[in-house]
Amino acid sequence: MKNFLFLIITTAFLTLFGCNSKSLEDKFNKETYTEDIATLLEKKLLNEEENELLISYITLNESDSLALSIASDVSYAEILSTAKKEKEEKEKIAEELAGKKKKIEESVTITFSRKYTENFIDEGSVKNFLFIDIFAQNNSDKTISGFTVLVTFRNSDGVAFYSGEWPIADVVKANSKKLIYLNGGEFKNTNEDQRILKMADQSKIKFEYEILELLYDDGTSIRLN
Image 1 (cartoon, rainbow, N blue to C red):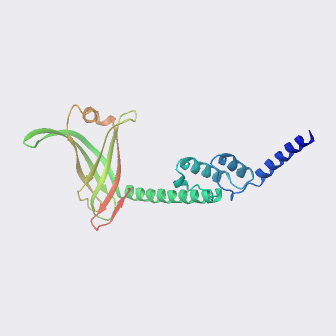
Image 2 (tube, rainbow, N blue to C red; image 1 turned 120 degrees about the horizontal axis):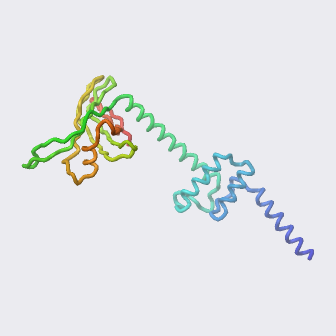
């Protein structure tokens, strides 16, 4: 009986000692990492942000041991360091992208003029084409030699029903506005998106745009991808 009681006490002591001795230098254990990290947080070896970052990084990468670099000699500290570097890199990329978008938005303003269909001779026969007229306002002191624009139309409920991406080769001089025609292709009643756009009341639909690329005549450019 005494031996059994001694064994229980010893086991409890070792378990408690093991938990208390937990550190960031301990090696990653795929079976116990949740408990390990909880202990590190409890011991204030991790703050809340680091705890969430570490758990998120491991969860996203645990199925790919190569991506996570999980090996017998990799510690929680090393994994946390990798996670922080990746987070910083993503934040840097996001910041750079936000800066580019802001620059483009300040440089060019697009306004919707009208949408209509018109007949043209194509490949020896008369075909009906869908067109969207927009105005491009160059707000900068540099001449724009072209741009790529993504156009989206939404109904009164905010649901997108027509979207298209166009590379534009038109020149828009500094601090000037130019009318540009977007060719939506041959109009077909079987194309639901085209049909809805043609029949929609222009005053009741919402026009949205995003400029994905901006080219200047001096050879410089701003790209979002």
